[in-house]
Amino acid sequence: MRERQHGRPTGPVPRSRSGVIGRRFPRTGDEPATARSALRLRLLLSAVFLPVFAAATAGFALWAAHEGPDDSPGTGPLTVLAVVCGLLALAAALDLVAVSARRRRERGA
Image (cartoon, rainbow, N blue to C red; front, side, top):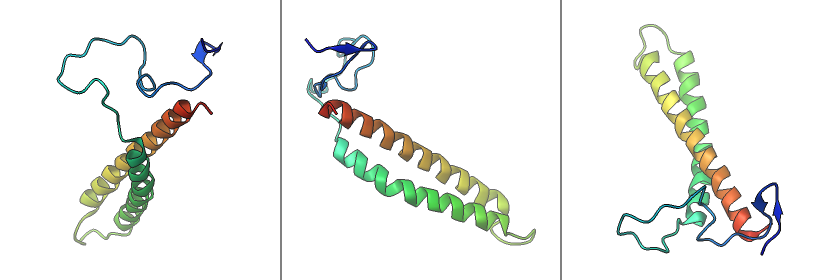
């Protein structure tokens, strides 16, 4: 049995249990019992798209700030695009953190 520190196991966690939080409920769907997320692909996609969406957020925000009252497109659509890109950048950053933590937990480091 692994030693516990602050209620958490200190050794590596098997891949089948690494993402489980709390009590596990019986499966209700027809997905495979050993289905796993492609962590390497998620890590790659998050690492690539985080700077892309961050740059797009900054670009659209700057463009919206320098728009005049009669320019097209107006500041409204540009602000919406900046907010959407910002939310996508946030999602990519959160996924990057979650995948990194999960990989670290599985390696036992």
